[in-house]
Structures are given as C-alpha cells and as structure tokens.
Length: 584
Image (cartoon, rainbow, N blue to C red; front, side, top):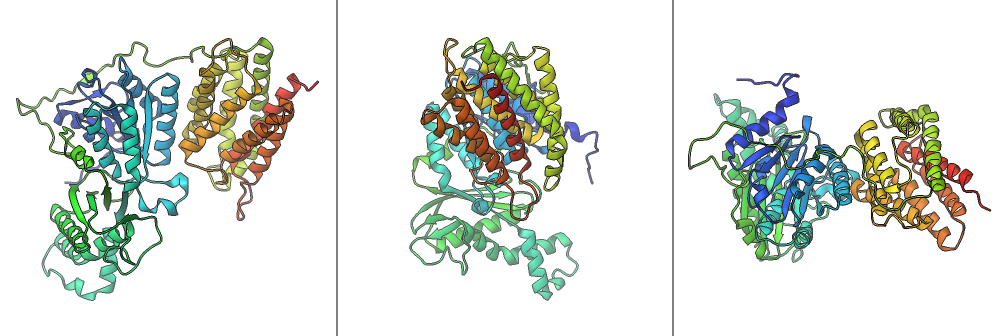
C-alpha cells in the first residue's frame, strides 16, 4: 500500500508523529508548545537535565538515563530559537543543577540553539551547549558546512548516564567534550557500490532467475559487503604500528582516528533504511572480522535505525575509541529511552491512547519586552545611540537595490530587501518611543528580538545572536556604572565572538564576521594607545570597510553581501556618533 502525505497533512505530520511516539512510550509527554518530547516526570528529578533536538526526530532518545527533552522543528528544519528557549526555561523552572544541550553540527542547529543558549544565559540560566561534529569529511568541507552523524547517540547516552549519577553540569560537559575527538563517523553509500558492481560485472544480470528484484538487490549487496566495510574503516581509522590503515590497500588524506593493536572500540552501525535486518547483521559481522584480523578489540557494538540522515537512505558507521573503562559502564547503565533499547509499553496495564499534554509551569510564557537591566545612559548618550541607529537604518534602506544586486550573484537576491523591511520596522518603533535607548542591555535585547522576527532566516538569526551577545556584556554591570568606550568595545567584541562560535567561522572565511572583527581589532589598538574614542572608532570603521571588500573572491564580481552590509551600517553608526560627539 502506497501512503503519501498530502500538502495539507505535511504541516502537522511532525506533531502527529510525536503524538504516536509518546503514546507508545508511557514515560514521556509533549509540551503544549512546539514539537517537544519530554520526560513525563522530569520535574521530580533534581539532576542535570540533558536536551537535544534538530530537524529530525530525537524524541525516542528521551528517557531516564539519556535525554530529558528533545525539540524537533516543523517541515524538517531546525526548531526555532523561541521554542528552544521556552524549553530551556521550562526545564530550568525551580531547578539549579543546569542543562546540557547536545546537538548535531549543522548551520541551522548552530545558529538556533546558539541564539537560544545566549538568551538563556542572559536570563541567568545554567546552560552549556555541546555540538557533535563527527563526520570524517569535515576537514575537507567549509567550516560552516560541518556535519554531525550518529556520534551524537553515544554522547547523549554518556551524558544521560552521568546525569543519573548526579554529577555536576561542568563535569558532564567537560567529560563529553573530552571524548568528542575519540568519536568519528562516515556514511557508507551502499547504492553507489551496487551500481558500480552492476556496471563492472555482467553476470549479475543472470542472478536469481525468477527471484524478485528485492532478493536480487540483497544478493548484490552481499557481494560488495567486504569492500564497503573495508573502505569505511579505512576512512575512519589509521594504525600507528603499521604503514597502512586497517587492512586496506589505499588511504585518503582525511583526519582519522589513530589506533593500535589491543585498542578498545565501541561501534555504532546506523541503518538509515537502506538495509534489511538480514543485511544489517551481515555488515556487522564483516566489520567485526576486519577489526579482529587487525587485533582491535570491540567492546560494544550497537546496530539499528538510530538516526535519519537528511536527503537519502544510507548506512553510517561510528567508531569510538575507549580510553576510560568508565565509558563502558556509562553506556551499560539503565536507560528507558526507546531509541536506545525496547520501548516502554506499559507492562503493568494496557496502553493508554490518551496523549499526555503538559501545560508547563511558567506563569509568563514569553517575555513581551526585554527587562531593564545594567547601566543607565545619560540622556545625551541615549540620544546619540538613537541618532546613530537611525543613521544606520536609513543607510541600509537607501542601499536596498545595491545589496540585492550583490546578493543575486551567489544568493537569493533579497539581502537588501529583508534588511530594508527590518529597518523600516525599527525606525517606526523608535519614532513611537517603543524601544528604550537609556539602557544598552534593553536596547540590544529589543534589536535582537525585532531582527529575528522581521528579517527571519539565517540572516535574522545571525543578527539576533550579535545583539543578544552585545546585551550580555551590559548585563554584568550595575545601573550606576559609567559606560566607557572600552565597555562599548567589549560588547562589540562579545558579538563577534558569538558570531564566530555559533557560525563556526574564522577571520578570512569571507563572511560578515571579517569586517566586524577587523573593526574591533583596529579600534582596540587605537584606544590602548590613548587615542580619542571617535578617532579610534573611525580607524576601526575604515578597517571594516577594507575587510568587507576583501571578501570578494577571485571569480566573484562582488564582495559577500553580508559583509558589505556590515560596512554600510557600521560607517553610518560612526557618522552619527561623530556628529553628536565631535572631537574637541
């Protein structure tokens, strides 16, 4: 029977899927907001809470000994920062032990979970974010394209087990972070090997006679099992006591897990729907044989459909090098998550079809306006902040067509339009006195929320992170603190650090981070030499404009549109400040 989802049903498919999940797992429930699966009795536990999520379902890893909650986005994209933050707030209600957030590396996860983490920290919540980038090919990809595969399953289990031991958040975070370099994964494209085998071997057309196409495919798969497994292990492992990697004739120049004879490994074979159950165990046996012949010890071997890889059906192989025997105990510890072992189907009675909905404990579901915190500016400085912001908005509005043209070279051609729309909303709110400028913390928080909702997409999230991180600096000062040029600079540097951290980028990658970083470096150098802050800021703006132009690649006609936009508004901010605060 061919079941297809209509366009009207796809909207609710994620929620319906998770409803089915919690129906079968009686220890879980759904929050009333978003697509968030949570342990039903999480509020009764006073241990560190573990959260994860992403475009695809992590809900079946929710259970005692693994995840406390998992958030999934609609239409198979990363969950929004608002849903993530709401979940963090719910998990933090009357709870002081903290939350460890573990996510697979991807641009959407980095940005949305990063923004939610920054906002949670500004709410004085104890949260740490750990990203798992275990794809062996990551070193060959741009940093912004780093991927996580099935290694997150092992890390989540380890973290959950440590939480059950009532260990502190910092200990769990540091232990898991230390183990990340010991975990590496690769995808095994079975269909590619089958197609290659068919093209090379004419005898396969005579396979099976009257057999079904399915059985022919399985027989073909069995013929290539040894080759697939050897090449996968070759991509992942390098023997330091031999010239060549594990039992393979060729080697590729990727970053591999260094091993030697007598080393102990944990294997996870993640079948993303490409293999039958029979084929799964044949591949597992071949992997064990290859490692055994190389003198490598496998202490644990997990196999099954753990995670779905976006885009296609495939097989992924994860290897973890065991350097601490306690890891095996953590992996063996009790766990009620159905994704790790059999589901809890209510053995004490019949299954309940009533979906459990938790309304949450927060009286205030979402803060409508940012709180007033941190230093208060004098009226003259608040007016300068208002004036320079208006300058920046008007500059971006006037450059709409220019930015759209630049963006059309490699993008959607709408950078200028989206920034113009956000600037128009911001100007309107400023003229209506709906944004407070006397308190930098409140001002930047307001900008963060406004840009996320009005720009949207990756750009909106990036700008939201920038202003959220800037606000955090002012949150650390009292309302009587005099805001000096060095404090302003510190807030800009905090923004750049957040962009670098969550965007997974470096200076020189040709992004909007380049002009922001260049401005900060030049301004700090001038201030530390004792120069007037207007002069120092001017030098920084010039450096930013040069860095923005330098993002133009050899085969590109224009620079990066995001970097060019930064050059525009940072120059406008400077001109506004200079008019209001001239050098004597």
